[in-house]
Each structure stands twice: as C-alpha cells, then as structure tokens.
Amino acid sequence: MSQEIRNLEPKQLWDKFADLNAVPRPSKREDKVIAFMKNFGESLGLETFEDDIRNVIIRKPATPGMENRKTVTLQSHLDMVHQKNNDTVFDFETQGIEMYVDGDWVRAKGTTLGADNGLGVATIMAILESKDIPHPAIEALFTIDEETGMTGALNLKGGILQGEILLNLDTEEDDEIDIGCAGGIDVTASAVYDEENVPEGSVGYTITVKGLNGGHSGMDIDKGLGNANKIMNRVLFGGFENFGLQVAEINGGSLRNAIPRESVAKIIIAGMYDEAFVFDMQEVIGDIKTELKTTEPKLEITIEKSDLPAKVMSVPAQEGFLRAVYAAHNGVYRMSADMENLVETSNNIAKITVKGGELSIQCLTRSSVETSKFDLANALRSAFELFGCEVTFGGSYPGWTPNVNSPILEVLKSIYEKQNGVAPHVVACHAGLECGILGTNYPNMDMISFGPTIKGAHSPDERASISSAQKYWKFVLEILKNIPLK
Image 1 (tube, one colour):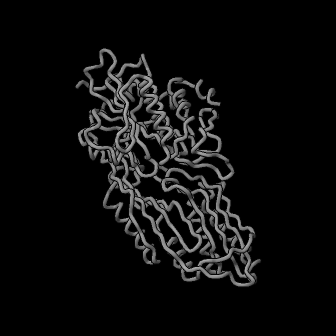
Image 2 (cartoon, rainbow, N blue to C red):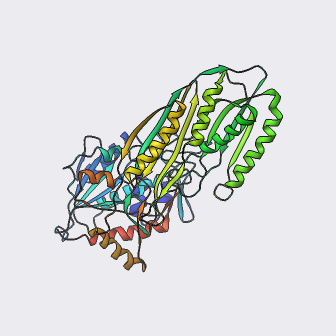
Image 3 (cartoon, rainbow, N blue to C red):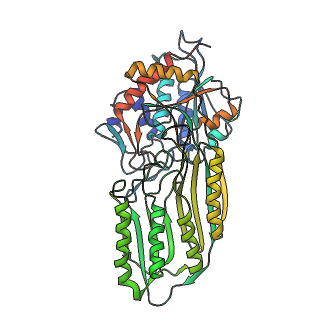
C-alpha cells in the first residue's frame, strides 16, 4: 500500500510522507515521531536537537554557492488530528496510517490522512536529505502539539532559531499565500447536576446524529456545515418541550478543532407518549434535514428503542442545559471588514458530554482580532454561567497580523506568477497557524505560509491532491533558489 504512494511524483516528497505516516503521531502522544525525527536528522550527520518543550530542530548548511543567502527556517508540525469513522477499527497510538490512491487524491482508510501537516514535514525531510537541491542554510523546525493547543510554538523560547525568513508549510490551497491567521481560545463549561430515578412506565430510546461532513473548525466554519451537537440539542429540545423527554447521557463530538460529525443521546419518554413522540419527532428531523440538504446530504438522525437507563437529569437541570446550548453561538460570528471573504470571529461547539451527574461543553473560539475573540468568549461564558456552569478560558494564542510589505511575500508572488501565469491569492486564513505565536519571540523574522491542496482536513474525508503536490514541490524548490542575499 505504501509502495503505491512512494511511486507518485515527486518521489522525494511522497517517499518521506510514507515514512512519516508509518509512525503513530496523534497530538499530545508524539514520543514516537519525535524519536523518528531525531533519528532522521542524526542519520544524515546534521545538527539535531530538542528544545525544552520537545520541538525538534535540525540544521543543514547551505549548498555551494548559496552561502551568502539569508538562513531560512522551514517549519511544520509533527502531530496530526486523530479522527476516524465509528465503524473503523484503528489505534492511532500503535498503527501507521493506511493510505491509498483515488484518482488525483491520496486518502486514508476510514481515518484522517495526516497530510495536515505531514506533507509539510515530508517536504522539509526531503530537502534535508537531498544532495542535488540548491538551498541556503536551512533550519528545520518541527513543532509538537499544534492541533490541540499550539504547545510547541507557545513554548519555543527566543534565541534558539537562527533564521531570518520563516516558511510555514501548513496551508491547504495551492493558489494561496497566507500572510495572517486567527488566534484562538478554548471555552470550557462544566457543571454537576442532580439526577433522579426513571419514572415507572417510561420507555428508553437512543437518538443518533451521524453522516455529517465534519471538517476543520476554522477553515470550514463558513461553509454552512451541520454541527452534530447543535442538531442533537435541537432534537432534544423539541422532545422535551412537547413530550417531557428526559436525558440520561449525551456524547457528541471529539476534538475541539473539528466540527462535530456525530452525537449519541440516551433518553426516556413517558410510555403514554411513545407512539406520538416517535411520529411527531419525524417532522422535526425532516425540517433539519431539509434545511441542511445541500451541505449535508448524508445526514442521518435516528430514534431507536433501547434499555432504560438507571438515572436521568432532573428536569430543572435539563431545561437549563438545553436552553444554554441553544443560546450558545456556533459558527461565524463576524466577517472581517478589512479583508474580503475572511471570517474574523467564530465559535465551534466541539464536544458535549453528559453522564452520571457531570456535564462538559467544550468550545474553540477563533478570531483575527483579539478584542473580538474575547467578546465572543464572554458571550459564551455568559450563556453557560446563567445555567450555573463554571466556565474556564484556556489555551489562548494570538493571531498573526498581516504584513503586506513583507519582502519574502514579493519573492513568492513573483515566482508563483512566472510558474503559473496568474497571480496567487494573498490571504489571511481563519485557522491557527503557528506564525503569530512564533512571532512573539521572533518579531523580526519575515514569515509566510503556503502549502499543497488538502481537502477535508480534521475529518476521515481528508485527502491530498497529487497534481497539487507536484505544483507545490516545484514552487518550493524555486523559492529556495531565490532567497535574498544577507
């Protein structure tokens, strides 16, 4: 299977991607990939070391004739989002990604592919290993835990990096050059609630929301995709208002940076309402599916009989919870007034768990404007605190302010236009790139971000374009040849 990938062009890139994807590397469990990367650098006889937080840095001298060029820091993150379909049996901590070719796309079997940011990592590895690619002095920075907290970038100390230019290889449209990004903050609401015994004569049901596209909670937040947690809450709210439905458990979503694709709730209903409940809820379900028929054609919402649970949420607690989730904003909050078609501020209600007298609601709020980020975070906090939750803010990281006068931007724009006959789109993205964070300790470093086309990042539908990788590889090599003089 990996041989099929290794035979793709450019072989240097896909060969390293296959090597990398054989190594388990879920976020926060990166020991194996850190060891892999250190062994790789040391095997090439290059200066290789970890910093205090376990980012890996590898340095390679300039090729002959390129010594008078500025040192370039090539940067990508080692970790990947670990998402899989419910019916896929896979252990991200022990197994390598199972890849296959589907036309112009490389995909994974039932899991995320790890092209985000594995293709960037593989690019740097191929350059470090090469003997015939002209380049200035290279400093490879492989950060950890980008996907679940930006931990590596946040804890990289000043004075370690030597590069004057940073090329971040972590964006997902090959006709775009990124010069700015959103910051983010985790908003987490938690509470304990009273439970009560299941009334006699009750009937148990399991409600399931599935079949949604999911996707990146920043890059895909403006696409009108369904959020499993909000859909489930709407179904539960309707059942509660009309039939006195009571919740025993909810398990919705998985990762804070992925739009939730699935949610499962265990509920009860009074036996006297049994048939009417199932019949009337089909109208609610039909309305939701009609609203989302264009963006979510595979959405399924099922109501199936199941065993009675031992306990359910008390009615006051449940009413407050459902209303709080209904009130909490999800999706685009504000579009940028400064850059066309750029989402400025958004929120993803990423994960909801309710069980055994404890509940948790996890959100990721993003914005390219710090004040707007905290405005929305405070709006969410208010909705949850009115219900009685304890709300915490965590993992806050800054955005990256665009520099339209960047010297390296001019280099990339010129090369792109010569190679492709059209100008690239110079954009800022609504995702958390590490450039903004790295810039706090390296404010004079000229930064830019670009990458090959990747679709469906953060979901099992993630796929990387083969033809785009060829275009991107050619672009990278020409950039390295044209790094400005010192």
